Image 1 (cartoon, rainbow, N blue to C red):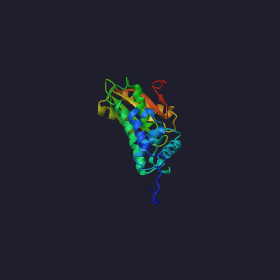
Image 2 (cartoon, rainbow, N blue to C red; image 1 turned 60 degrees about the horizontal axis):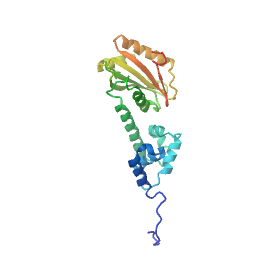
Image 3 (cartoon, one colour; image 1 turned 90 degrees about the vertical axis):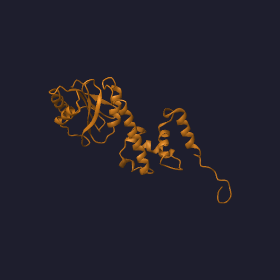
Image 4 (spheres, rainbow, N blue to C red; image 1 turned 45 degrees about the vertical axis):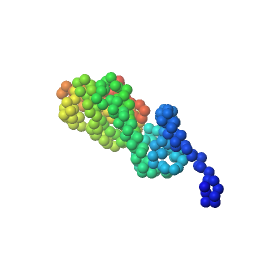
Length: 233
């Protein structure tokens, strides 16, 4: 009831949250549009308010991409009206959970027989990183992935890599093979001349110690380049 005794009219989104939650429980995330899935996240941090406009605005800011949104740097998210620190935290938790799930699908398994899952993991981990990062996947003699470590982080177009350190770490872990991975923040995965030279240096250093470099993957936005497929390794 309102102050004048008249019956108050519930907001147009009355019951919307529970209906959306029920749809998710009944049919799963695949039955929801991206903005609806995002609304479920926003429910956790935006109480008693219609979250649909904010969900649609957030996706619009990132060209309709849910993945681009959750991977966005916090400082970029803070520029958007209506986004609180709690909302940013919730989005980054979703991103971390997605990366952990992708990692769980490859860690402790053969990298060669789980190649598609490996590419999905590398993309989830690195494709939207605003700076260049160089990672090494260490494999045992059965090509089981035993470790995934960042070896270098750099600028928007360069990450310093030291072949001696890569090989030294492989020996420490008892690795028999390596897969090199780095991202191009520009989105274009085409290997540069410096990428090719650095890869060949690492491969030569590893070969001297009977450690094989299976491939070097360059991760872009929605695509990748394989040194092996390109005949560069």
